[in-house]
Length: 379
Image (tube, one colour):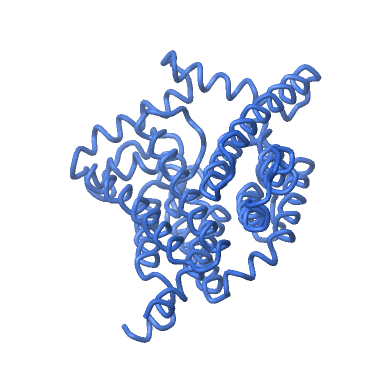
């Protein structure tokens, strides 16, 4: 046990949260992929399980090697990571795989994997925002200075993500505003930023829609999702939510038991977007509350790590990571229980997915890197 704790440096509770979420993921995905496996490979669920475990294993290798690095290296690499991720978004817009009028993925040749560049962009924007806040937060005489010196990378990343993935762009934007507020940016600057961004987004989307730009066919999708959610119309999106509610109702407090969830055959994407509802069906509300508790614990540990970190970059980055993962988890859960329109946000480190899990593991690794020197500093 001592050898393991020596190799796995940093906050042990963060490691435990990551391990428990991955364990929940393996068990629930294996059960949820029955229908997908039947359609794709004649019912060969082991093939999906092996791939999922392999991808999670790669993710934990990323987490391990990231946590070995001093987190300050990411301040120096922030610009490079950000602009590389912006290039990825542009390439996705031009050459990405199109699905439902949205280009979110670039196919990786030869390995059968697709790379979701918005996940990379979220990381790049977060790193550069924290770096900019540390450098400039105490010297921002005007809102123009705030935009030029601090917030522009977030705006650019959100603008490039927006055509294909509104919810990801919105979560990035909200997370950035909260971080700026924590860093001491004037609330008036943040209010003006919200107003300016909303007006800019409206003008941009309206103009491109009027010009019949193909990428903005998603505008009607966003509008329909909200309208159908409010009006409770019988649509595909509301069908997802109704099936999720059915899964939760069947699950009760203790669940139907492993492998006994019936909605795996009727619930759209029970292994990704709607995995939380499927977990409750098989393992009960008690397990659903436990998963929610894990994300709350992660955010709490991130806050404590931020409080103890000696450098401002580490403080902001720790709280930013905790916010990013927790917000995404809560949005996914809110969709599953029917209090939020369908967004397509995966449950971090639980939903089936490659690059999404990898970048979540990367963020866990950075958080662990920030935390690993704290025990020595406070001995």
